[in-house]
Amino acid sequence: MKALLFSILLVFSGYAFADCSETTSAEAVDQVFELTTDVPSHLKGATITVKLADGRESTVPAEQFKVVPRKQEFIITRTKQTTTKLCKDSQKNRVSLVAGKGPKGSLQTDRSGNKLTVEEQIGAVGGLQYQRKLNERISVGIQGQTNETGSLLLGLDF
Image (cartoon, rainbow, N blue to C red; front, side):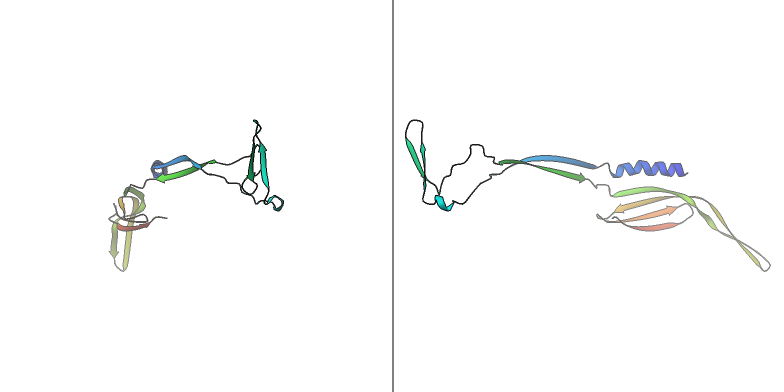
């Protein structure tokens, strides 16, 4: 009996996680990295003159331009990676089989003289249960058993 119950629980527990999917997406984000520096005090009002290969000269103000090394690094593209886990919760109904050991039937009494004897039969009890999810956290249900026991159920998911 324990092996059967364990097997049923093992099979149905796999269905609880079957509707989850994980997606990973990568997105290129363009970003302009601007490098700004203040003009040193000894270069304020100065000019930068460049002699070109053909002999001409070009002069620009030092407040707008500066002389920098040829190799500079600028970050212009970054990759943003996003992982999303999506689980569907479309199952709203649940039907369960119940099995156990408990009282069967009604009490039997035997009265003889001043003595009253009460007997109860104990044995295997089976049942059926139905549950319905009302919203994300609350469910209601009903259960009936072969020993004429009925139950109303109220569940809270957490």
